Image 1 (cartoon, rainbow, N blue to C red):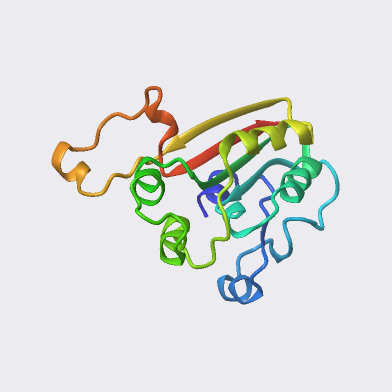
Image 2 (cartoon, rainbow, N blue to C red; image 1 turned 60 degrees about the vertical axis):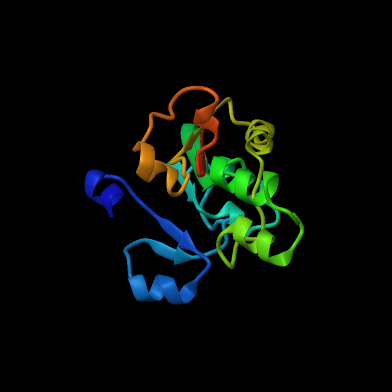
Length: 175
C-alpha cells in the first residue's frame, strides 16, 4: 500500500500463487501467478520485489531469470529472504546443537512450517550475476539474539563482520 501511495503515477502490480489470498485482499492490479513464469512482457518494470519467497522454494534460478526478464534496462531487483547465517540461528541450530540432523532442529532452523530451505547469500549473488545483472549489493538486517538484547540493549550491528549475521538477507541487483 505504501508503494502505491508514494507512486500514484506508476503502475504497480502484485503476483501471488495463493488465489484465495488474492481474492480476499482484492487489491488493484494483483494477480494469481507463478514467479517462475510471469505473464508480463519483457522489460515491463522499473523495479521487481521478491520478498520472502525464496525460502518457500527448492529452486530459485527461475525466479531470478524471470525478474531479470521483466525488468527494464537499469531496473532494480530487490530480494529478501531469511539469512542462514543469522547469528542466533547459526549458534542455536548449527554450532551448539547436540544432534544437528533431528527433524525438530531442522524445522526450528527453517523457522516456518512452509520453509523448504535457505539459500546461502553468495550463491544468490552468483545467480544474480549469472542471470545478467550488472551490479549486486548484499546486506543483512535485524540481528536477533533473544534475551541478550534485553540485557545490553540494541547494539549497532552495521560494522563488519556483524553486518552479515542478521536475521534477513537483502539483495539489490541492477539490470
